[in-house]
Image 1 (cartoon, rainbow, N blue to C red):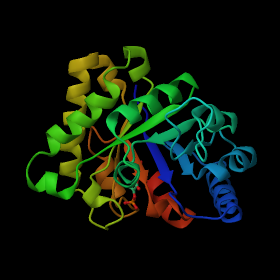
Image 2: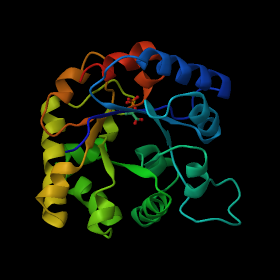
Image 3: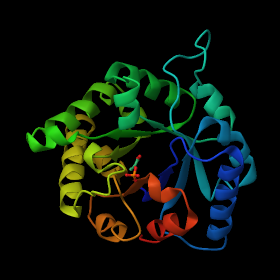
Image 4: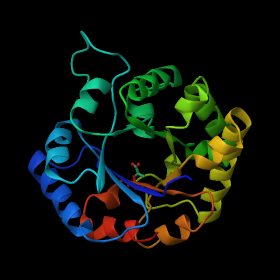
Length: 251
Ligand code: PEP
């Protein structure tokens, strides 16, 4: 059965000290508590090793926000999937719309990242989502289908089965404008259908598909109540325990 997951994406926020303090505070808040979802925090690279060593990583999974599309070598400033795995992180966010838009990450590049993440035992949290103009033009279903197909459908069935998907309409990220639960459900069901057509009903039914885009303590319960919405990828509201915890508790 697929998992419910609430994953934070800190983006380029928090110094090492601030990030460590936040991770420890979240770990303490979750200690002894039963929650009905897996909890993950996605942090900048420099935080990964310190945070993975400071918290109970069976309680909170640690994710990188990116990894390189190359194995190793002369790529100044890049961080490989092998390096990410060596920190104790178990997940990596790949294909976030900010990476696609600002760093020109195309499907072939993302496919390489996914392959390297899997080869290093990391679970990719693979993001897809349309921009506002695409939604307004009514092309959002085909845009998202293409993003999934181009980067992921070259994978073998057993590898695809290890991936977590995140639908993040770009117009909802950091804007305060959340997709309605119906819009999220509709797109998640569409994604599941495409996956079923390529890999079969069982793989599709087992695939966790998270929603991301201005998800918060007020709207999470309704979003997560939809049958194909298996949790959230949370940006702004993951930056404090006070805001993140109600989303975790929405399950
Ligand atoms: C994100 O960056 O993945 C995200 C969903 O951001 P926010 O929750 O701030 O919209």
